[in-house]
Image (cartoon, rainbow over all chains, first blue to last red; front, side, top):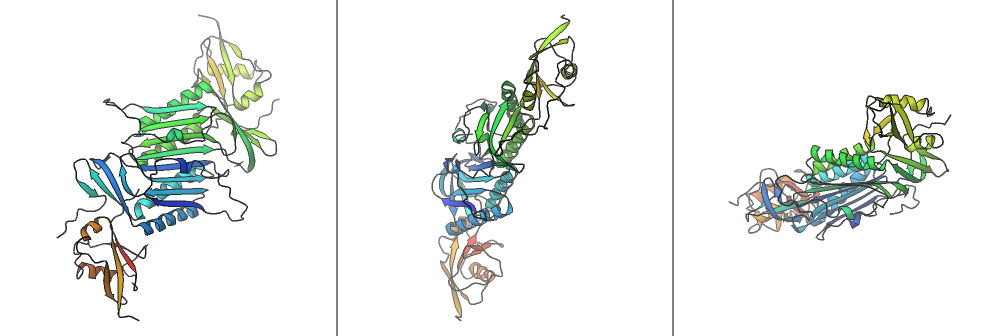
Amino acid sequence: MHEQGSLSEPELDVCTRITQDSLDGLGAFENLGTHEDGAVLIFQGRVRNTNDGRSVSSLSYEAYGEMAERELGAICGEASRRFEVGSIEANHRIGDLELGEVSVAIGISAPHRDTCYAASRWIIEEIKKRLPIWKHEHYQDGDSHWVGSPEVSKT
Amino acid sequence: MHEQGSLSEPELDVCTRITQDSLDGLGAFENLGTHEDGAVLIFQGRVRNTNDGRSVSSLSYEAYGEMAERELGAICGEASRRFEVGSIEANHRIGDLELGEVSVAIGISAPHRDTCYAASRWIIEEIKKRLPIWKHEHYQDGDSHWVGSPEVSKT
Amino acid sequence: MTEVISVRTLFFGIYGELSQYKSPGYLELPSESTVEDFLDEMRGAAGCDWLPERVVVAVNQRYAEMETLLNDGDEVALIPPVAGG
Amino acid sequence: MTEVISVRTLFFGIYGELSQYKSPGYLELPSESTVEDFLDEMRGAAGCDWLPERVVVAVNQRYAEMETLLNDGDEVALIPPVAGG
């Protein structure tokens, strides 16, 4: 448990990371929050073996590193002001990922479970909207595609 | 990862437990789901240091053991039919708990995150509605109370 | 057919606390008794007059209705407002 | 005040792939240029005619508007549809 000390204003307990390291373990979330928090919610996004009906073999995530770090911090900072959360720990993986590996992990602690669900959902949706990270999907048939981008041909 | 084998009907991957053992660790959720699952959501309910404005010192949970096991299995079985989930692991603690200890832990894996959030939320609400478990709250001032029950005096 | 059935009674939570001194572990009832008959008997003859007007009951570990018929050997549990989670 | 500013250009995702052979790492623009002027120059003189009509742009790691004014030394990134999570 992180003790919040005796500050009159509660400290902002937000930790974010853009990393090439594995996010598969749950160790980072074992001690999230304080005795003020009656609920913890941990979301993991993982590499699925199918997407849009195609068999995926692996993924690479590319990030605009400095901006992604700034945006992820901004998203979680905003979440901590919008919702009455205790702690937030949000991490996004970049680089090459195998099937089943965790690409994004978001842990929230809060006094009440409603807040956990709302904040967790809000953060993952904001990540999908504005975090400058791109997913290059590799398929079993040898093809690959930048997810969400139109197929543009160089003329 | 639990491999689902080559059955034509997917197996129901549901695991539930009513236990006196600590649920504080996240180990039970490290390998939830399969490569079909793009999302995992883990909810933990924990003993808060306040409830209804009173300072809580500790809790005891009493269960109608056999019925609680049956009901928790029924809730999760129903969830797996209502929602397109991969795996469900749901555990409820009984006995004496200290502040910060986990009382209930629910892990869901599913192909899509929407399903995880919906199923997780549904299961915790059903648990609160129908799982035959009672919470005896002990307060800092020495008083205690069965949560949700009216103060009845023996006449 | 027996004229009398015997059911096992279980009390939990606040009911367990209130019942601990004088509540029966078994109750005899006429055959064909329902959950409602059981509750009337508990409130009256069995001395559990502290039971509230509406009580949730489980028979053999399943939630039951007031009309549910009881059988000899059934386990009948009085379920106060649950508070898991 | 300088007559000309130089901005650093960054391409990511599909844009990175499309730009890898002939896209500039720096672009010179008249001072007082906006993001919109930058995009016009990229699509024309800089040869990035594959850029779609609407492009999201970040200036110094923050999302920018078409009217955002550019300064000498700015880092201007072309942001294709993001796909994190």
